[in-house]
Image 1 (cartoon, rainbow, N blue to C red):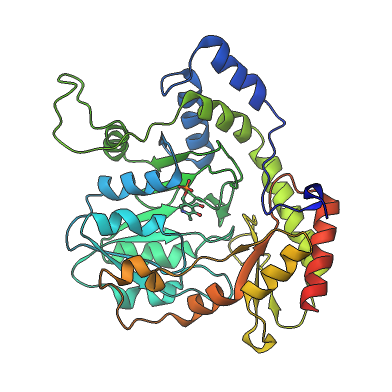
Image 2 (cartoon, rainbow, N blue to C red):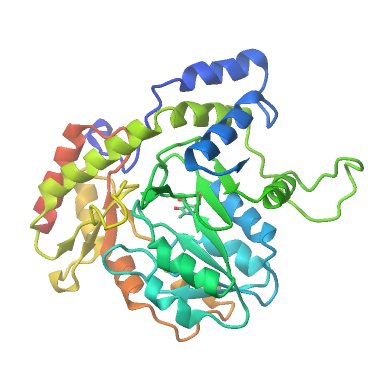
Length: 374
Ligand SMILES: Cc1ncc(COP(=O)(O)O)c(C=O)c1O
């Protein structure tokens, strides 16, 4: 098998206005975090998501860090969040001296099990972090109801749901503040990049300051607060704008991919496929995941190795936060167990799902999966 035959787990599609806008950056010399594409990208993406304010940053992890800081989450505060997510979600909570409080996943949607949230609330709870997983939104109405009854802040991590909506309202428009990632495997990519969104002008102002080292307008090099350099470059903004122009088309491509795989993989014994829809949303398949039933006697790791030998790229599912060595060493989550997330992590992986995936690559992938898991 040659390298050319390998089906990569992700490949972006960059054949719109990307080259044209990038050339404009180079021709005009606007390559740093000054430059017109950043503002255009912020304005157009936040308008798409129906938010007043968009603050671009250098990646989705940085977006979460700044959002947590801007919400004023500090020592002793508790933040309720799913255990099944990426480490980015927990970093700044822990660094700020706050405590992540975990919730297991729903076995069907793979999102945080909202019915378990209220039991986790204490007098120290400050916020709920929602993370929409793999393209299907979390059930927002009950969650927002809980947050409102208990006067909790809501942070929505919409990194994996560009172009998605919950009951017709765009993902990324919920709660006090939301975040996006534009890493190369996201529907809209800037290579590396992220955005914070909010309808609260003060929060947006705080995030703008935090991303720019908290320089002060009058006394530039005198700092009242510690920030970061999280600025996005005009080059990234150029890419983002070109990608955003095609987001509706990209969502349609992903939905077609999901349908294509589902048609070919339905019926494999003991293999759970992603839900195509719930009563509040239709999947946008950030990635197409598979979860193997324990009874199959094969774990994700072995299936992934067999698929690699057939030229098919895969990635494991997230490793839950309560099982992260770095967090356990801090004494967090002692004795806690979240069986659904543990099973998903052990038995789940995703197959090639990138925007540039061809029908031929999907056919080869589906055929290989059928051979390995039949
Ligand atoms: C849900 C979620 N949040 C945050 C991130 C972090 O984004 P980035 O890789 O841009 O730092 C990711 C990245 O894949 C993600 O999936």
